[in-house]
Image 1 (cartoon, rainbow, N blue to C red):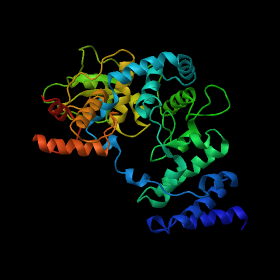
Image 2: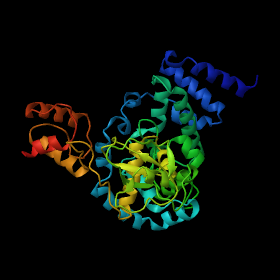
Image 3: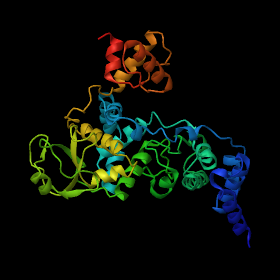
Image 4: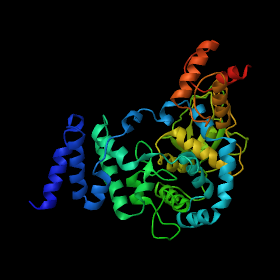
Length: 391
């Protein structure tokens, strides 16, 4: 058995015990062996894994907002006047890079910029955790998906080895997504492009590379140039027909069910699926395979819908017209900052009003709700904002 085979065997042994494997040190040793077997240089391994300690990544595994937040809250916080205005300005600022990306990959600029806005608020929320540290923590301490995170860690080490991303820039989310449009490391290796031609695929600090890489991702996911993602529709009263992203029918079939565009015009041609993100009494959409391409970026319908609706508004089209089926709508970021300001004025300490509803804000909301006779669920909705306003 040669040296590489020995290293592979050691790596397999060190990682095969799953959640019951030994402590952090022995897990990290196994990761070093695995990285060497994968061809990562000893210099990169020593720099990235030499004295690493775990972080708090595991605590976030069950807190992804696109799966745990009501869709009306999720959309309200991501598609608001601020984000639309900034996105339109960035469409102009990065017009040359976006045109280059569209020419190469066939994805319209508004869609690419919408992904940028939802993923990182146009580069303002890139994540503050070292990617390698988060992924190593998840490999060694997460209760599930350890093999997935191991593959991502090996990809992250290869990125450092190749020099596309500088170590000090290699920061991201708790799960290892990084850069302006939040690629996972394996996606970066297979999809990232050097759009500006400087010799590096630097999505961490170069918006042009990030925009081009996102366009390439969507192309690979099946994006068709010139095909809309879908549109809002009206359902007939008591509609009980098919729905769901997996049921794609000709537009003529949907028309036969009595479904019309929201503005009353023809549904057009092609095939689509009927999406009811809040049930039959909320907004309804017919979505094409381009919606599925966006869904492939992060497999959550609310996430894909936020991007698609934002892209429409960047083009000057209206947002969602049908009210959500709730008496307590979600808040825009302006309203969330107002809520935090009002909580601070009432003696709560939620920190600087930034529109991010974290633990301190939720706890303060719940306490105020209890005192105001509202259900103390800690949710930032219009009811508690109006109560704080004194309405």
